[in-house]
Length: 211
Image (tube, rainbow, N blue to C red; front, side, top):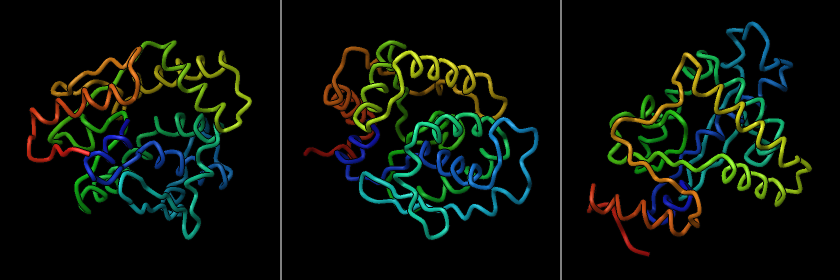
């Protein structure tokens, strides 16, 4: 939905999930396990993580390597969820995320965007759906990538991730008080987009544009 909204508005897309996945990939390559006790102080600095925003998109690099596709592996996503609870990881990415918004208007996607990273954003959305719907969507997405993950495994992983994100000490998953809640259960992406655009038109008429 963030990608569709960025495309409609002509904004850059900041996919913060991709950043955490890139960190996870880099740390795994260094032999650091997500559930290990200590994260070496030099580990984050050695990753040389950078992003290149594009209209309605974003490329992620570790050094000179474009890892935008490699980070989509399900094992990397699982590790990213566990690494993301570490305060040192979240703090290291905070400045990078905010710097991305200085390049122009941006749609930022992530679980702490409206509460921690961009608390003064012009418009905030909190998208939700019931667990079964979310699990089905994720399962279909993985099938399209020829993943062999089972539906039950996807559902259980989603429950575990929600629990970790809601209970972590640093930037827990909570709805910003001024966020507009959109229950997407039973709605198509186009329908959700129209709900979001209608809200934007009310809040900031000057930035709402037509196709």
